Length: 126
Image 1: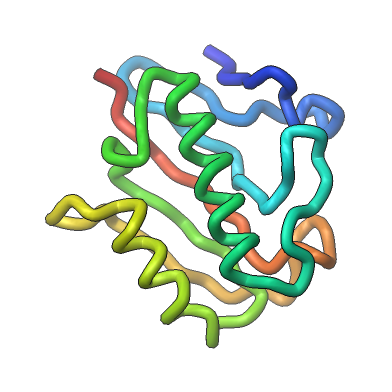
Image 2: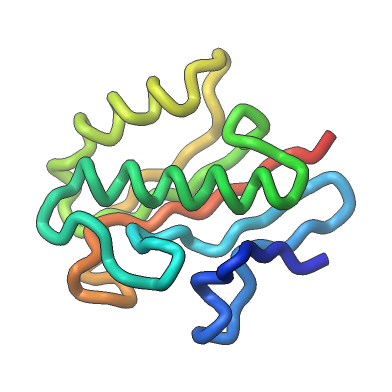
């Protein structure tokens, strides 16, 4: 089942915000964009990370899941030196222990050159 939002910020790209299969939801990479697709916080990693996490939360919630139900996340960043900032945000947004499984990967660029982070996740439903 396709997961969407209103407005669906990925509709124009022809991809789903996420897909629910049984009791799992797989999200597309959530970028630092607002509901209209405009980049938020250009040049500010923390602001961008907070927006990407907020988008991730929306997608999971729309699928019947939540950040608390995430079992695996992959975080793509354009500067690995931002890992400490993201670690603080992870504690804030994913406080339950044991923590989720996560990969934190530096990439040369993301789909939009202004983006500094993109987060995809797998969450449980129910």
